[in-house]
Length: 88
Image (cartoon, rainbow, N blue to C red; front, top):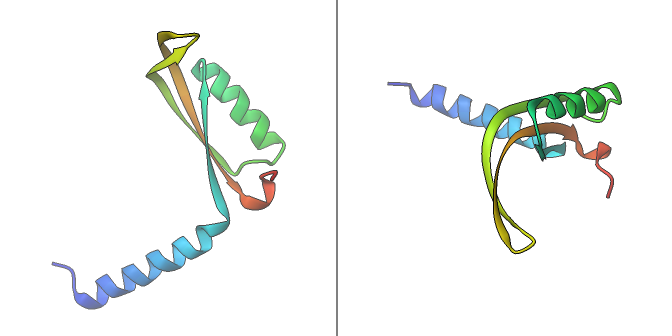
């Protein structure tokens, strides 16, 4: 079992980490393929608009479009950026 002192120190570090992360924003982008997600992430990184991109390949999506239920395969691109980079 962890000691109370360790747990408190870890908790304080976590709170400090969250406080410092308050300027960080997470973006969720659906892409038609992993290739498209890689392209978008590369462009955003090159333009210094994001700090990091995470690609989750081949997810199943279901949505309604023009009154029909559509099922498709997509990839998710999660991007991390600073609030100063987000246009209001």
